[in-house]
Image 1 (tube, helix red, strand yellow):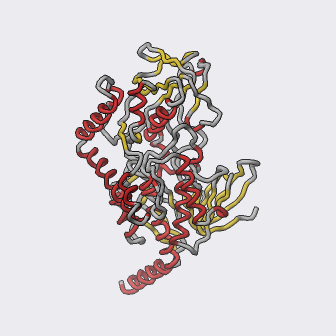
Image 2 (cartoon, one colour):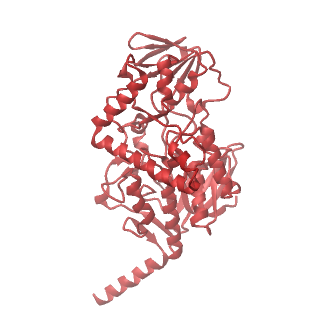
Image 3 (tube, helix red, strand yellow):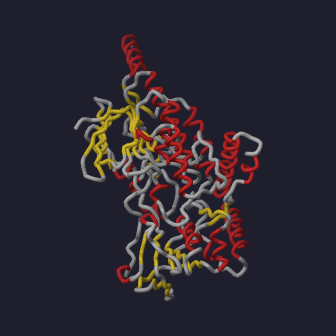
Length: 501
């Protein structure tokens, strides 16, 4: 097989991958590139997930790309609208012919002598293999296993006579009209499913082992809608981004500094919408706000269907599945025709691939994350991982911009490759995700580590990351450059020192 070579190879054609390719077009236009996509369509998460009500849990003024204004009225957008936005971006930046569909990456191998990544893919349709090579690799695979979500081993699951489905495997032929639906879970997916399914189901019950914080957010940005009448679209978009990022950061910081105040406010807002008779134990978590991700519901749609009686919530533990539902530890039985296991994602990095460097496997969990963008010991590679306490794309955009700055710097100085290297004093043993959520705890051994201080510390703060990723010097002590004029000059300098010593 003959290899196809590109300057930059992007793995994944979802929100991050399409954004990365567009940034290359804008900032490094001389670079040849290709995107490898396992599925047969563009969009990643927003094409894969088809469950009822699928939507963003972040506003589109911050989840959208920095260079492409979001123009629709709804800022909390449906999955279909987000998918169209991604497709529009791909079309505008002429990316369609650069995407290789149906290609599953099976190996990633770096050669230092050749300063090249070799990527072997396997066709999802016939199992045939292709070889791609590149000078620089961008991992835009997201953070979870696309094959299956996380589902615990429920006792007696084989006894249930109805239908059991994980939201990640939802298909259009699932009929829940006038049926009793039981949703297991309390996270973002569950609080989205409940109001969406309640419109057609006989009744929807959300069964949670423990409560989550749920906050009402406006579905539309009224300020931006009004400003569009007087100001250019791009100006309105940038104003909304700054405003919403500031609000997100304020809530997050206040949650960390004054958790009791934020908790009281969140519970008060929920209680007001649910009514005086509602038992607030179902929305009163034992942990502090933002120790786990905060769930957002547009216009309080979850609270509305609960108050109207179209849905209910139960906080209890599962004893066993039965033929017609679930028996709880409390002895209560919930009858169901359909059980939806909204029990979370199975996290993985780089699509589950363990890369090799000069023939030696590099376990991602043993790497330190550099500026939230690169991994120690892995040359010429960026891994895009967005914010968990704010909109994903805010970070993804900046990491792509940083990568373009790095590529341009390396070209200017004829540098063959670079690799992040941490000193012993920088190394710590903490995952780079600072959340107590179950899906993070389950996957701690799969995640890279973060260090004690910059550039190895992950701050999860947009305003702090701006100077680090957009404006800081490229050649800092965390990166080792190989080849190029800079290295040669250092060699000459060291020679002079040795001559006069």
